[in-house]
Image 1 (spheres, one colour):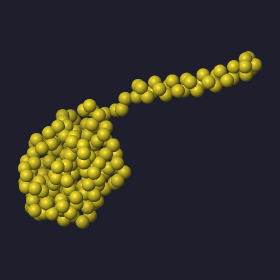
Image 2 (cartoon, rainbow, N blue to C red; image 1 turned 30 degrees about the vertical axis):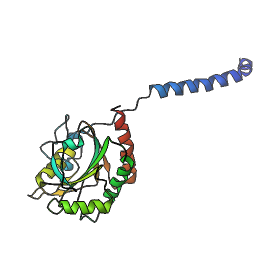
Image 3 (cartoon, one colour; image 1 turned 120 degrees about the vertical axis):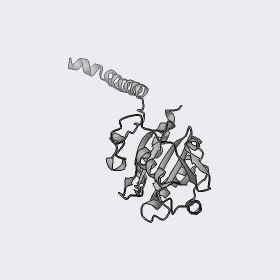
Image 4 (cartoon, rainbow, N blue to C red; image 1 turned 90 degrees about the vertical axis):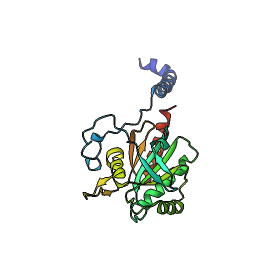
Amino acid sequence: MLAFFKQFKLFFVVLLIVSGIIISIFYSILKVEQPLPIYQPNRIDASLVDSTIQHKKKYHTIADFKLINQNGETITQDSYDNKIYVADFFFTTCQTICPVMTDQMHRIQEEIINDEDVMLLSHSVTPEIDSVAQLKKYAIEKGVNDSKWNLVTGDRKQIYDLARKSYLVVKNDNSEDYGMVHTENFALIDKDKQIRGIYNGISPTSVDSLIQDIKRLKKEYQ
């Protein structure tokens, strides 16, 4: 028996290599990239979700909105119709995490600058301070491209509700005037107004993942 294997040693080595190649090819053909998850309120940190929807298990989407951007233009859900977009919450006078978040959003802007399917949306959590003029000044300082990225202000309650009932990324400061403690979270929203990912906006590695997930999400619509 040993002599038999020695005689056909080369044959078995070649057979093993060819078998490995065939298995790899079949694996590549059969391997299908899994779609990104759809985030629901009951699966997200409860501190970021309004108590009225913490039980919700499915069908969660971003609510309609009407806000004003850095150019004094009205921005609604229609402005993002059939778009993938990244949303966050910030304020222009923030000296802690906001500058880092804005830098990371700018990095995303550069990645999507020629991609008509993808946009950005940043909401002020201090709308009484962040007037149109203040947002415009900030946009110019931070290199915001108006065609890709809206910085928006508006009614405080509406922004609060969007943050905690739609995007699920902001904490309640427990005040009586819809106070918000913004976080570093970025939310990836699909063309069906669903949350498909939440990322750490001050982590370059997490934002790298976000950029890759935008590409994965685009494939779902091809």
